[in-house]
Image 1: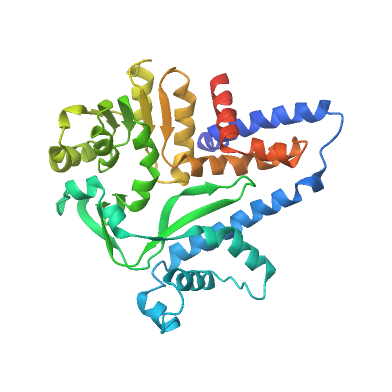
Image 2: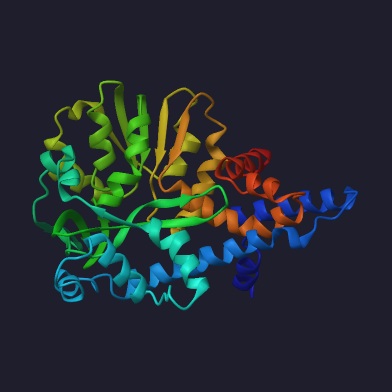
Amino acid sequence: MAESVRVAFYVTDLQRICWGFCFFVLLQLAFADKQPDEDMFEELKDIRRRNNVARQMMVDYLNENPRFITGELIREVDPDGILSVEEVYYALFTGACGLDEQDSAEDARLAEDYFQEALCRLDTESFTSNSYYQNIKIPHASFGRWELTYQEYAPYEAFIYQDIKLYPDSREVPILGYFTEPFRYPSVMEDGHEWMSIKPSELETLADPIKKAHGRVITFGLGLGYYTYMVSLKPEVDSVTVVERSDEVINLFNTYILPQFPNPEKVRIIHSDAYEYMDTLMMPGMYDYVLADLWHDVSDGLDLYLKFKKREHKFPGTEFDYWAEESLLSAVRWQLFDLIVATSSTEEDALHRLSDDSLKKIISTDMRAR
């Protein structure tokens, strides 16, 4: 019985934000001279529906058969090479997702608004020339339940390439990539399952945090040390502190990866829980730039992200960034969607409040108030 009570009263930070925002909405509606016209937002609601439909189609493809398209299939469909690889790939991909652009106006709109933007043919050399790939050699090694190894994307295999792209009309387009030749990437396996890899998506989604890093940098989450390596190369970065709670990951990094850094003296590893370190040891002014990179995706990352946002205001003058923040904000956006629409006077007002910048302010204001 006691356990049931604890479960029943467990409330996430996102739920608290929703409740706080809901109270704000009810106050606005109570004192408003005119209730918002629900019909005004039908197109916005339909975009939300189409976002979900397009995303689910792509997720199903990636989960069920990401290697469906092959070079042999492309040659079979277009033996004379009349079409470009991109055109054939697009036709095969949308067909495999169940789209019928010829006979369905709905499918034609989904294709134009989402799928034409989503697929990117990538050049292997633009990634293999990355200095981490060039200079950090990952050995094949096993230790306990962990294994250092390489995995491979097959030619034409589809994969998540970048974070979600948000358009001004609130369309959210997942960005997928594929190579036309095999592509190897370093990986850590835990009990036979992928735990961490340095994939093209890692390079793309960390490009901006690498560019922005300066002065005294701290990052939460070590992984295979890609971010640590890249920012340690920058002359404008004085030091890189890494907070990691797994001693096995730290030992892996110290044994196989850190000795290959050209300037390991810049790097300091702290064995600690991220939030415990922020609450007890991290003082205002200690760091100039923070990157939080503790999560794999939205499913395990949203609550962790909100816990960081709750603490961010305690460190004025320090710049904070979060890995895959666009995807995390997407989850917040659709949790708050109905509340925002209910208290918006125009579609333009609703779109502004659904934007990433506005959602960051809502989260920060709510977290700071507690």
